[in-house]
Length: 76
Image (tube, rainbow, N blue to C red; front, side, top):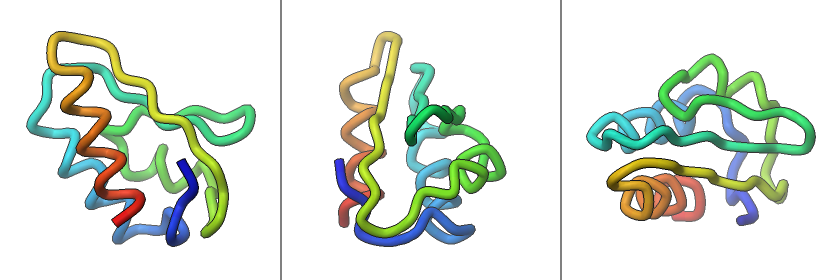
């Protein structure tokens, strides 16, 4: 997906809050870096900027819903 804004503190925090209600493991990948979507600092450390393409990986019982929640945060 292509980001609509930089992954600075506010959107990274929104992403972490969205993932918190799920049991699945969720990861955001940007270039050669990946981050646990439950860590604001890890997501911010990706240094993904507006217009960048990121990949969302989710694994677990509610993986589809968790990935959809992350996508909603990142593209809305």
